[in-house]
Each structure stands twice: as structure tokens, then as C-alpha cells.
Image (cartoon, rainbow, N blue to C red):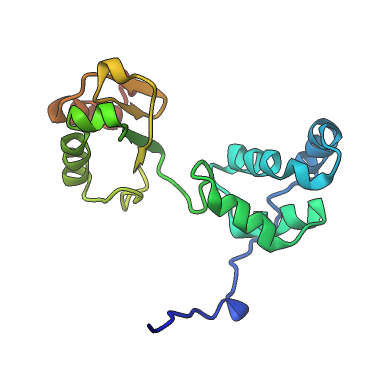
Length: 181
């Protein structure tokens, strides 16, 4: 078996001039978050959340800054951020479409919902439209099994979905009518 290798030792991380962990964010984390943990490393998830909340995703530069802030290795930050699905390691679209793929939604045809979205937007699960407007993901459970299949458009739950209903929800978002349905 051949090993696929990549030259990560010389990989370049895109950096911007201003830090992601701004002085204000550092102060907030130092005053509000760090005191809750016996060791700085314990605040790693909270730091990742703070950056993602501020910027919508966690850039590699921010992970390096978090590592320095917490006095841990960059690898520990990257391992943690890449392990959890909730952290975005690349920018996502302005609007997030999350289709439930739990057993109830699978039984009720979530695949047809996902396929309709993929066909309409021209993207696959995990991708963002070229205009940066929509990102499509699938989640394990949205906790609405009795109204399956379901999906979130931004933070609005759409229940008992049909392919036509989810396409209408997308059109509504494009028209500025929000994700309600």
C-alpha cells in the first residue's frame, strides 16, 4: 500500500496583518473564561467558540494565536478544532442549510431533500455556493423526529419537508424573506 504524503512541514498559512485574537477578545477570555479552568488548556473549546462567534469560522492563523495564548502546541489546537464538527475551518456561506440525517429523517426521505438542494445550488454536502450565499451540511439529529424530514435554514426549523418546500425556503432566503416557512 502506498502512503499518500503531503508536505505539511513547509506548508504556508495565510496570515493577515491584524490578529484574530484582538486585545479586546484576549481581555474578555482572560477575565471571563480562563478563571473557570484549573489549567489554561481547559479553555481551548471556549477560545475556539469565541473566535468562531466573532468571525464565523476559525482561521489557521487564529488557531496559532490560540495556541500561543493558552501556551499549548498548535497541533493540539488544530487536532481539537478538526475533531469537532461544530468548528468551521473554512468560511461558510451567509446562509447555512442543515439537513437532518437521523434514522427518522432517513426513513422519511432526507436524501430527496438533500438532493433537491444539491441540484438547485450546484454544490455538494460540505460545500459553499460560488457567490458565498449558501453552505449545505448534514447533521446527525435536529431533535424533531416526529416531524421528519427536517432541516434548518439558518436557525429556522422546516418540518415535514418535501423537495419543493425546501426549494421554496431557499428562494425565500434569496428574496430576503428569511428562513421561516
